[in-house]
Image (cartoon, rainbow, N blue to C red; front, side):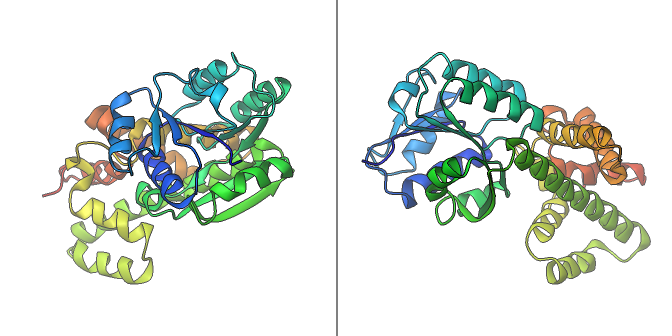
Length: 306
């Protein structure tokens, strides 16, 4: 009999992952889903065939029914709160798969609490933007006992992910260390694009030709972020794709890792200072691509492009 699956968290990434899980993975029972804002669960269910989703009012109502529990939540304290609720139940034999981006120390702590209670744990952060989640093109990083990796693998490559980085039998925290270092590449990409486009505008070259070069040289994420900047998406969208508070959380964790390791990430320090300015200007609706606005403003231009 196939495992019963509970899914916790329907943010920008989680929604796409759930859709692919339901559409590409043959589940013999409806997928149990819980999100703090219930309307998100209702919205996701409405986009899938009838009877494929069972919406829950609490985490506790789903834990006794599930064999595998996926979590993808926004912040360390939110993940820990969910784990606390899960641990009010008997979890012997259950596999908890955490796809959240949190500090390696947090991951190690929750892993210890789960395994001490007789459950299995897998650290499984994912790389990719929401559009990649929708397309099932994420990259999963799977760390933990090989038996747990094998148990979770059928839900990743070919379903929610296009590829996996196998960290079988490695410490759980290594997956999060890779995730955080990898995310710094995104911050540096956004920072470089912002600085390049501002220089192109100020020097008289114009952003059109630089964007054409980016599209030809760096198709994919570079091109997508360049488009978001030049179209004004970074300041006109209703909800952020990568919210400034979450970006600063990730940057802060990476900077903490660097400090603990006796090194520095100076490019990330610059990006984080710009993210701080994005928050001051746009509040919690600010987006990571708003770094472009802060670099524009430093060069004497308006934060919002026209």
